[in-house]
Image (cartoon, rainbow, N blue to C red; front, side, top):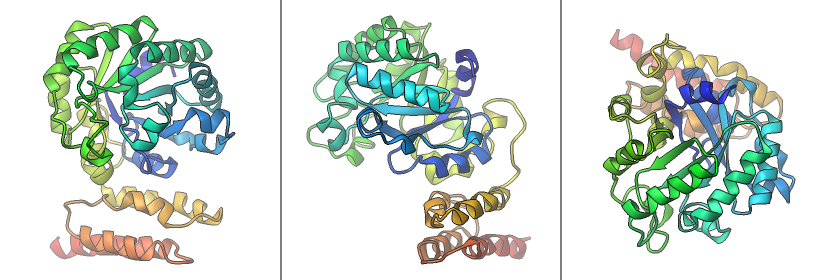
Length: 335
């Protein structure tokens, strides 16, 4: 896929989320949207290059367009990891400059790199020299005592000079001292106007906004402000149907891929069956499906049936069928 074509898909993307956006989650999300750009969980460059953990790059070809997010701070190692990702068939390689978790900081990558824009520029330059696919960055507006209006323009200037043409900005600072990773997702105030200012200041950059966007309506409002794309995280995971089922139509102006959440659940059956036949566990897939009917009649029964049944030894498709009965029975009763 060309870089220009990928920009089109980046109009709406699902954020990389540790422990959540694995290959099963991405397959599930792709059933609801043919266009939205999907991201892996963060994969560390040391794990790939030094640890030989190529299994972390496994994905289903139906996930395209799909991007890998890398974590690291060594330019040479990141370049090698980027080549591995390109060889695996990923459409984009993204550098994590936004994650505030302790385990990320200890490896000197993630949000702490906002303090080292020159190093980030070196990283992305070497990555871009190694691969043909786009190299992008996901960052915060700043960290700790930094003044975002001072540091963010300089950061963008340096990575642009290094060859980056697409960036996603989480519109919050990250407090590396004093706040937990969970608190960093909610407590630092959002500064959407600053991200809008950055788009006006860097019109040649494709800029997506991330943080606190919980509906397609909110995404459309951000696009109307002149931004090129919107990245949605937790809402896309916890209420996937609300975000993704109508995204092809509302965001991209194309026909919806499926008609209902029930259809999505039914279309997951063959995938789940193959996973079970290969020795996998049911909950490895269905844990990502708990929010499929969020806010809809029967959602509690669906969630409870999957949560209680999928982790049991030998659990199979009968658990999915029982959970689906909780939803379809309510719909029939109401109809």
